[in-house]
Image (cartoon, rainbow, N blue to C red):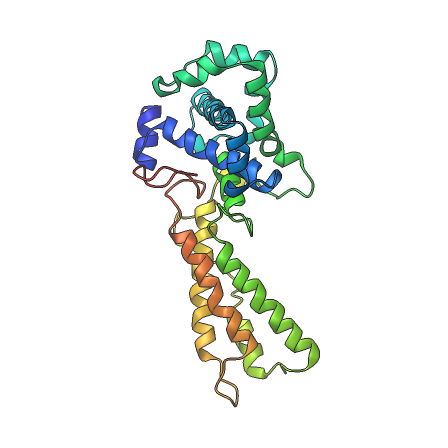
Length: 289
């Protein structure tokens, strides 16, 4: 299948829309998480210097062009771009020539017109931390990190306004801390029922529904397999919570509080856009990650 058509089949939109979606996610991460400038913080900056908004838009377009070119050159979907292949596109000098000489999508002509050493430097700032994530310590095990995997990592970061797992994760952590505190000060005495429930909630064999093993590059599980495993664990936890007895006052105990929270996070996995890495632009009618 032709490269552009593969994007439309997978995402329901073209490759440039996918690249713009992920470029926006990288930009928002840099602004909100790294620089501490959320949308409200940026308003007075734009009022003081209106050109700033145009500069930010140009940065996102250039990042999108870099992502698009990397995907096109390696004949992969935008989300499947391996991050450590990106620096050659934003290196000063060689990066400018590489972008100018190669193919450009029709919708990205403006990005090429705006291309300059200063703008390329700004794109490098937005991408460098992601491009070298596999060399950072501590480093996750597994195959080289792809763009889609990285964006899912960012969206799973607690507290990030662009994230999609944060509410369930915050609840789960809060309940866990409460349970530990009650255990430490004696308000919760672990019972045999609690121990039996905990054993049931920790299956020895992970559950995979789709896709079937073997998994992905290098034999590691695909992100989709991890998501399906999380859904299976969520179902198990919810069922276990229903078996736990209530206290003398009719309330559920600390262990039962924590169990039903995980399905909230798991449900967000199930609603994740259909991509090989668990990330990608939403429905094209409501543009972005």
